[in-house]
Image (cartoon, rainbow, N blue to C red):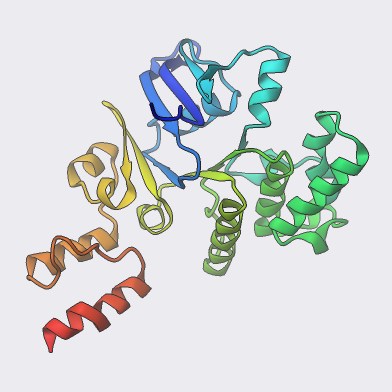
Length: 284
């Protein structure tokens, strides 16, 4: 018998007051250790789904479970959930409110009632993980956009969650900032944090994720990222385009230059290696 999902929604439905259902009968799982990209058009329910997973919203039907155990929405149950799942919203200014970086990052651990020594250790660990230790005393209103993003993520990391959910974490960052953030996320994954990223960027999802979950009008479709993001029918239903890596692989296979058994490129570097390897050899 397989282990229960780390976090799961079962038969979950939700509608905002006086509005149509946003999600209906949804089954969704977060598996420990798997980097998961959540994709869908605007209005598909991504934000609602993330808030349901983190306890910010409660499903009208169905249930949320952590390791197979239903979540209760009393103080004890929500504290347990929030030490398991943390959500970082897209705009860091919606999440930052303390005077300095260190004060902001310490807010969550302090609310858990932890001893001062434990709070200091968690804050130091989170600042180091996000590479912002030097900004500890910086007023939050003097931070750059990228620094504010990192501070918001550090506040979530200080809770030591098993699942970190990020809403469009690379939005608004320049290419260098995006690369630095991806390196940081790799470090968090290596330290045991399961990361879920909501994004519109199919190329980023293909490059970064182990699994991809596509929100469509008929439900959510989840599978290995290289497989799910190569299915034009699912992408069309989700209002998304084909990632360049999948399109390149289709073109190479149509020309007889790439065998079906050989994975397509997920990054430009992989394409270069492919051309220098089997493709270059076959072309010679």
